[in-house]
Image (cartoon, rainbow, N blue to C red; front, top):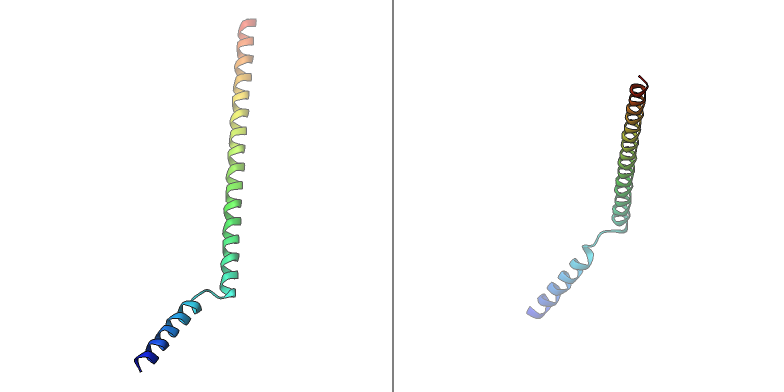
Length: 80
């Protein structure tokens, strides 16, 4: 009798380990969620990089304008 119960217990434990994995539907949903998250991260990074490039371009344009103004002011002062 003990042998039968031991065999049943081992069989139950073995089947419970096999049956605990996610279903195909759950795996597909997890993959879709991972792709959605990766896409949103990529979009956020792209927007951030574009904003940084725009800020750097604006800063360079401002510096160029300031240098041009200073040059014009110095040239006007030399003429007087």
